[in-house]
Image 1 (spheres, rainbow, N blue to C red):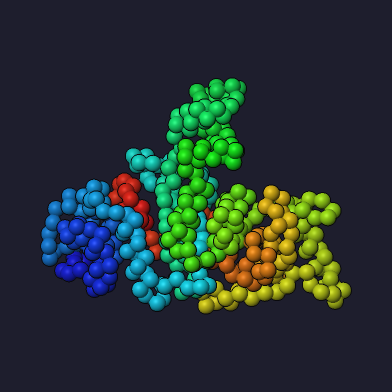
Image 2 (cartoon, rainbow, N blue to C red; image 1 turned 45 degrees about the vertical axis):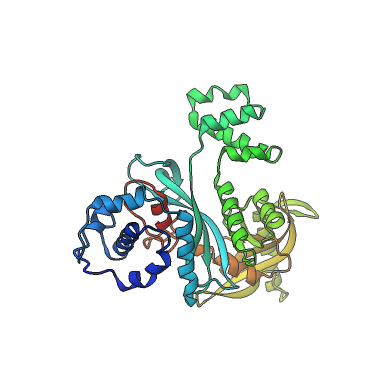
Length: 401
């Protein structure tokens, strides 16, 4: 490990953006911490503190910065965004995209505040982790998180008491689950809470689900940046009818969501799953090509991060069950349509396949796991965030993850 005899030049250059966030002493510790994240292989507080030979300090000073220093996390994040806005390469652009995703921050052990046993799609098992909901920005030049909030496990007792106080009926037959299967009782209460919110909006305050957090982050962003109408993109977990209506009717934002095989399209002949519909279109496409007719799936090319990508796309306006009228895109990657299709929807009915596909493509930077592992399913760390093995979850650490 190479010791530090001075703060790195990049830290000294950008540190003034953060000067008003901290007290004089805390500002020095902030620069020490950021320098350690950049330079140190051992990113624990002890490892970072041992780097500095030009001003030796007790480790407790750095501990206090991360746990009890009374700075504003909101002010710190605004300063970070001001730094990014000052650099042309990271400045937000008209063709930028906002994406929503949640990130599993796994831990070894259970002695962490707000930790929960959550399902990891990579290992296909339950792991102890924090879950960070992120509003992310992406364009062809850069990617970085804008806003974020740590999801907290539901307080089952508070939720039950709140539902009863609001005269929400709970099935007596489910009461036994409290003792025999607490996780099922929790799932039951959360399900009731989700279903009753439309009739009783006040119930939302009982629990911040990932969708609730996502709405709050977007409300905050739109309030602070009313002139920016960047499209919002999200995966199938966030593509829920009420959330899409919130984006369209309340925030008036364009979006590109993702549907699954079993979502349904409403046709003149009745309802079909998207898988059935795609299979039907594929058959029509192959027959048309064999007879020299017009292809159903058109070849499109998009640019992403300076590279060209080709897709074979169907794009029309349809009625989707529970979602209403949407622009529907069905994409294949292979010319013979031998791969599995992807299904996207948008509330912008005049958008074409290439534009919708380009926007959806910008969700990927928030998805691959930090650290070089490759996956298209894991909820993972946004690019550019650092995992800190500090031993607890603090607002400061959650920002820098």
